[in-house]
Amino acid sequence: MQTLLEMVGICKSFPGVRALDKMSFDLFEGEVHALVGENGAGKSTLMKILSGLYLADEGEIRLRGKKIVVTGIRQMIDAGISVIYQELNLIQHLSVAENIFLGREPRYAGGFINWKKMYADVDRLLKPFNVDIDPRAKILSIGPAFQQVVEIAKALSLKADIIVMDEPTAPLTGNEVERLFEMINALKKSGVSIIYISHRLEELARVADRVTIIRDGSMIVTKPLSELNTEEIIRHMVGRHLSEQYPVAEIPVGAEVLRVEALTKKGVCSDVSFSVRKGEIVGFTGLVGAGRTEIMQLIYGYLKRDSGKVFIDGKETTIRNPRDAVLKGIGLIPEERKKQGLVLGLSVFDNSALTILDKFSRFGLLRMKTIGDLVRGMVAKMEIKTPTIRQQVRYLSGGNQQKVVLSKWFVRNCKVYIFDEPTRGIDVGAKVEIYKLMQNLALQGAAVIMVSSELLEIMNMSDRIEVVFSGRIVKEFKKGEASSEDVMEYALGLHSRAS
Ligand SMILES: Nc1ncnc2c1ncn2[C@@H]1O[C@H](COP(=O)(O)OP(=O)(O)OP(=O)(O)O)[C@@H](O)[C@H]1O
Ligand SMILES: [Mg+2]
Image (cartoon, rainbow, N blue to C red; front, side, top):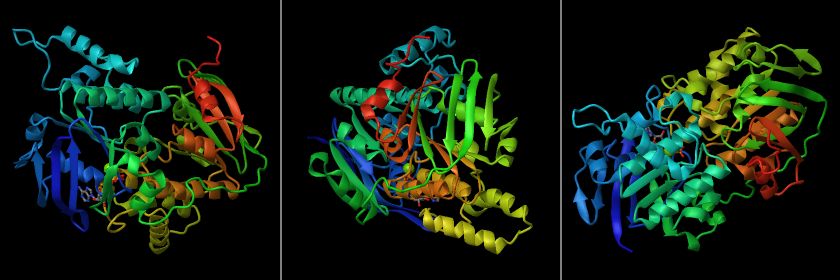
């Protein structure tokens, strides 16, 4: 195999943080090289250096054996390197097509944009994904999964030799993940090299040729995937042995806390009925766009329903908006952390305090020290990697931002917790902590709903599984009743009558 890219001895520091410490990485022509490591290990930083977004403090980048002096992003794009960032970079108010061809729009001889060609080109680029995306649609009107597809289409249109995918599957579900893998294999065959970052380790077996494990900014090991098993990868990542990926807990189930009856909203969902009891964790799975998030937003009062009833502790309740929902004891932890869950310009402390203050002010307990202790306790428990709790959240790694969003909620007292993709972008070690925290909430008598696209997590962590297809609950399984294939079949709509 021909070596295409080498990054040698890369160092990068931020105030208070040594993100990369003599990190080395290389890439063969036509290989998929997975880069794995815990939240905050330095993966995204390394890729930002490769893309020219950050300059390394020390170290060398060689392309086809030649050292390159990095000057900026433009130069790296011209050198054939295309990075799809973890936090997607699309412009919300522009259309899909405009985003893909930004600055490179096909034009008529007269200089006017050739929209017809542009839309046709986008259709051609999107075709292999078999998704229903309108090239004219504004980015803000399409979901995160579709946005991810648009990013990949954009990279493809740039005809890059090296494509970096920083957690490409985080917003995707089973079916789309499969399509992505097909695309990756096709790209590989055409000679493109791919750097693949993911926290879903079970995916590696499907795509990766080699794996590099990074810990605390340094390379721990690079090996062909065939010479590593998942257990070893985890051990190298976290630096210790991790005994259980899915903790087991005996939690007594009590009275019904939440009941939803015939929840309906045109174009979103119809006739959705289910209930959750004290101590239960109920998992919602389905394809992206099946309506899982929207069902939760309807219950939470974020979206307006056409009809249907919500009962809490057996009593029918009206929830007009999220404030109502919170007052009635429902907490929803959203999937899109940047938009809904965090104030990026505020510190870890302030972000957490925003939620905690609410809780404590009710009891007239406004002691900064108490809050500080609570926040520090959470930071330690969830292993949030930050130099201090005064650090602005925007400077944390993607996974650590997600941990801050979650940690805010664990200090509240809700009757019902709705977690939408709680472990997206979170490393294996911290996932276990989040599962335990969820079980703890259940043990304290809360009803827990978990929306997740990770089938293994749904299978292992839910007492009951609700499968959503096309806005309806098409099947309910009890824990252990179904194999993942069974669940997938329902999620794909193979068992639903045409409606
Ligand atoms: N612009 C920045 N300013 C300050 N610190 C930063 C900045 N960018 C990254 N860091 C810090 O550098 C370290 C490495 O972050 P990086 O984003 O590379 O992690 P990662 O491996 O991609 O993690 P994740 O899996 O959570 O995405 C983290 O401690 C992070 O907080
Ligand atoms: Mg990252």
